[in-house]
Length: 213
Image (tube, rainbow, N blue to C red; front, side):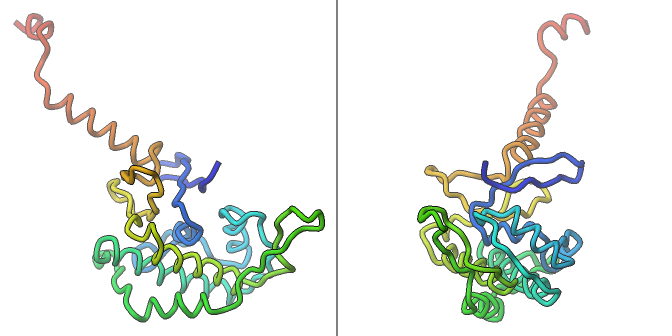
């Protein structure tokens, strides 16, 4: 099953599939007010993210503290670019920009050597060549971002419509009507709120009217 398991404010777990490797990095934190959700603090954190991501198989990584800081920088630039394209940015959360400087950060990361694919010893299995460093991992993410933002689904990069949910995803469904980060999370919450609103707007039924009279 694709996607990453996230935890809501209430502690409930749900699966979120953003549809692209680069957007999976955005769940680790972000610029401005989203920095309070930061999970990339140590090299082990970045390795753990790679293990949870859609990279298959998981690459063998040798990550430094500097690589972690670099990953956060590229991630923040990508979030600003995505937010600017989707909704003009989120200045109230300290997320504005998405201009030339952020694009330069992504392009510079993509220009570095990426993870190198290799054919396994059986001639069929896919592997990653050697032990990669954090910069190669980030380069692969940045290249994926460029492919997404300039490709066929560029206009389908969206932000969840849920209240106080700012998760970014790409809608790759055929109808292109995805609204939620996850139907089991924000989608379900929306249905519950809509049901309560309908019930609140309804008067008493005939049986209730008779009982009240």
